[in-house]
Length: 283
Image (cartoon, rainbow, N blue to C red; front, side, top):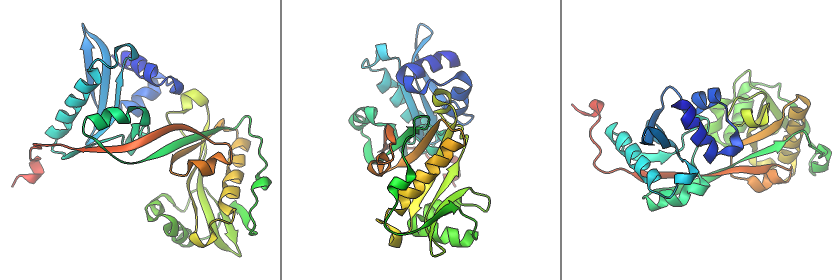
């Protein structure tokens, strides 16, 4: 059955060229619940849920617009409601795949009562043909660029000025590329190599600049973009095949470096009616 579900998935998302092992680990994880729609024993579509998240709905392209997606969604809502959740939302970070609804399906979910809460882009740059010179992005304020060697508290303080939710990702042993001005952190990003995610089978070795931020007083001076250009060059020098930007709302900024939007996602949710009490809520 898993191979048949993989075939349906690949027909819906051919750009990922995902293999069986990665499909099972990323999409059909140990906490996932899989709902299938079969005709004469053959699956024509499936949905994957985890907790209150609808991680994925896929329907064989030749059988789309025949109500199969609607049936799968109804079953997913019933399943999530039975667990005591009051809302259903699309995506889910823990899936390491879609963190929202594929923008191509947003209209379908809106018709089913979902509301859009926002969105993001995922972007990539093929490094084999990388041609830019990071010096071309040099800002008008002199900064020093390199691997951060300072104290963790100073780093976390700078990160908190940009996004307090990111602080948890910066540890003592994190690989952090940074720009400093007179010894003060101006811009920073995590740099990860050989990341295993849903793009690995299609593109090879994946590198990621993540949690890219510039401290407010140093913004609009060209520091951040030169830092990302240098970090991207590092990924190429390490032998990465692509540089992947996960979850960004500033696609136009990354496009200056040649990054392209690979997928646009929309965060959506829906209130569920008639939710039963969960056991822990019953006194």
